[in-house]
Amino acid sequence: MNDNGRRQFIAKFGLLSLSALSATTLLQACANGDAPAETKGSPKPAPAPAPAAAEEELVENIDCSTYNQNLTETDLKTRESLGYIEQSEKADQNCTNCRFYNPAKFKGDCGACQLFANGAVASGAWCKTWAVKEA
Image (cartoon, rainbow, N blue to C red; front, side):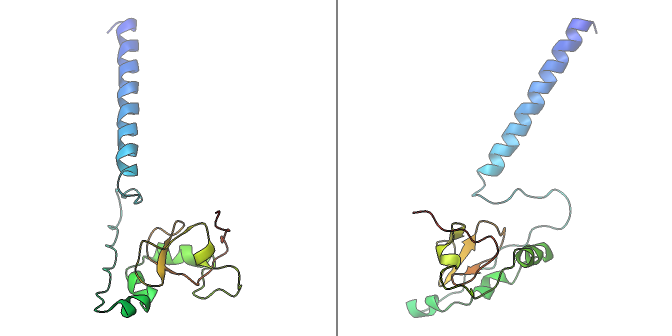
């Protein structure tokens, strides 16, 4: 292979590698906002199924721990490192008025937090990363 052919090969290989990496990133981003799947280690546990409620009032009283039954040790350590507590001790700071809270992901008084990969958080909970929700 001459010097010119080698340069073309390296350039094409680099573009091919970059394209493959970009495609992988794009596919992961399009996977409903889920974190990228790990290629090694134990498989990610399936999210806990939503409890079946016969009446609307039962939905409001769902204990968020129902959604947290399959949390991994890593998930629990993340919550602990962020100082997550089920009931806020600050009257004006809780998950409901935090910018990272998504109330639509779970039923009842539970929602999701952008900082936690798995599980639900109580709307009245709090952690060290609380930040005011912008209007």
